[in-house]
Image (cartoon, rainbow, N blue to C red):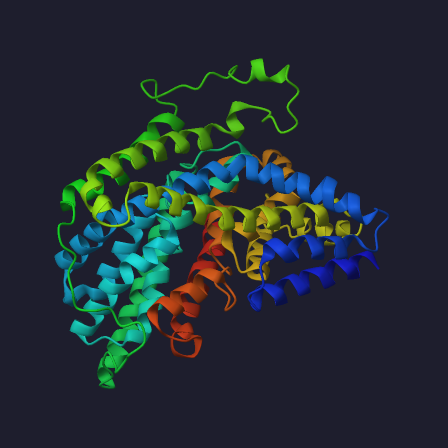
Length: 467
């Protein structure tokens, strides 16, 4: 009966997420439903497990969501994101329109700009390039997705996106974990995805299919005046990446920053309930916090004239801060739900099944399958990975240590897998991409689904190569 209640809650969570209902509201309700057949009283499940774990997640990651959203908004309103996109689009031109869109999205994403902001910034350039090159507009969502939500988000080491940050708290790693694995797998996703889109373009050309007659969300033919210089526009992105690399010091360079391992000791006497157990658990987050603050300050300075001409600096800062709340609460609610399920005796059946997936010496296949399943259910890369690692990270870490597998490898494969089956039709980011482009799932989901298959299969191919 307990197992039935858990499975029913999972199915309902997926259904309501698919229908567009807020996980902030429904995750605690379905967590209580999952616990209904257990020996636990329901209200303590909500207040002592769900809320405690959600607060734990909020405490750990809110600053990243907050500063990341503010950085993205300042870069957008200050014209720097548009200047970067314009530079890449104009350099490659209509002859390489697909590549220009992919690289433009990847540059902004890897530089620390929110994936949703990237879509809004890049779409007008993508539409203009595709129209000029007479490439069907229905291929735009797949190109935006490939450049934004795949290799630059979770594969490339050092990515400041939340999908690359979440594993650091579970495995004590840095955002630069397993750099060779991350770069090779990331380039594989990029090259195969790009090849597919080029192939589809040639197919359409042979059938004399062009851009098409579209009227929904077609960008106006106008240029933005007085944008920051292209070289200056790239500076905040570079500062974020280099500062994060220097402070997190993943390669143990003697000249890079060394965090004091005893820095948390004075706080232990305060008996704080959510105090991190070691610096390793938080140094990646501290490093990125500082990097984003520096990036924000530099972006404000460079884009100050544009910011003042629009809504003003205060408005951009406030807007970015407000937008971060829904994002972090969504994922925290998912983590709270996963934590409730993991605490139930009935979950041991599911856990045993997942832990019994033993292909090779370590937990990599089990981890990738679990993360993909949860990402597909929730329609969220970060939400799915958070739930999966919240339930099984400690077991995976123990298993990996016994198999002599580095926590860095666990980190990288978890981040890679999170960007696999997350792009189900009910994914919030996917729905946003379709809406921004003025297209429907029927028109554009096929090619995006192929990208999904490519990035999902490549995770398991690289696991096979690794083991």
